[in-house]
Length: 202
Ligand SMILES: N[C@@H](CCC(=O)N[C@@H](CS)C(=O)NCC(=O)O)C(=O)O
View: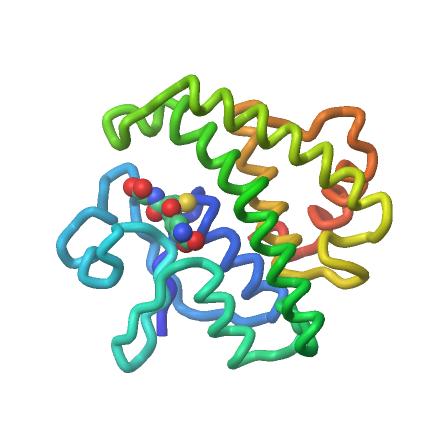
């Protein structure tokens, strides 16, 4: 099997952090997004949407979508569990993972897509929408700060995929100066905690 990755891109980093937590290493193929290697017919035959990451299995099956790839490895390498341990816990981790994706990661992605030079000529840009998403992301960070007053990690007492999604999204925000507000002491404490895990360097 191999992972189609792009070293500086946030979505593949979610998978790399997940794999590092599981101590799983697999062959990696770097896809150069600047050179539009992800737009070639060959790459699109693996993911018609032309995005990284993609996990290609030995039988040729291609799995894209970061969380779907993580789900595969949660099944093949259950320890340590990163997506919940029983029915209730799995549902709660999924709830928090989706909240982190929809309310933190995606708005921060939208700031980048709609305001950053890199996407000029690649996607239609609506800078006003980018700024609205920045406001939304900052408001959601304040909300998350309140949640983290009650527990160490996003979904409870244990590090999970919800922390990975939030960490990668928040780190991505640096590129567009969408940073954790200084008054968010709990979120800053959490960010330091998860950034100090060896997996955060993946
Ligand atoms: N929903 C997908 C998003 C994948 C995605 O948007 N990947 C970005 C890199 S972070 C990409 O390949 N962008 C290249 C492009 O849009 O040209 C996932 O969860 O993996």
